[in-house]
Image 1 (tube, each protein chain N blue to C red):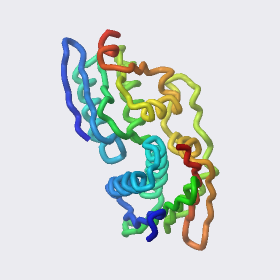
Image 2: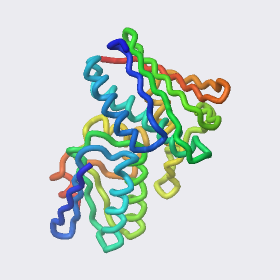
Image 3: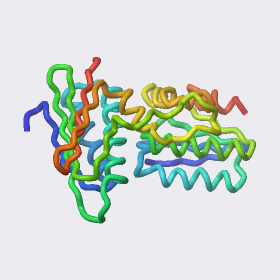
Length: 140
Length: 110
């Protein structure tokens, strides 16, 4: 593994998100990424992974989700692969965020943030695997 | 995440440190709904030592906001790190939830 790449295999358990964030912190420090940027990456990845872990699998079996981050110049590419059911993030409708409190719900908000914090989102279904590729320009 | 609770006159202050995420949110949700059920109507959450919030954390805050409003109480937040505050602003929560820069400012609102 080169210094500019982070590759993790996470089990389909929410407690794995803690391990993910520790690795992201280390990666951020190693690469000298701004704390805000590390926060945004962590937020987006936690959304994606908690979605996969909570809703992606129809059985009670153990599954592995691979997360890979690669920094080339100022472009960060993140790839998340899982063998859960088909889920195309790009098709989810954004939430209504300008309505009064009583009508506010949290549904869809996670995806709204992923779009806000990432510059590009590409979804592919390859055989039985979801492959999500995200790109983020690092602004220092 | 560590949750510290302090009662000052009729104001209850929760101070959070660490991470409010999908692992720690259920616990905080229980604490919040517990104190509201027991009659707390003036509630402050101090984010001063909070390093991270996820949308699971936002969900807990949204629920408490609705519960307190229904009970005709008042709920304010304070002392957020700038990127945590930004999450509240992006979500539009700052339109119905007062966010103060310091705990002193927050306490003066009651």
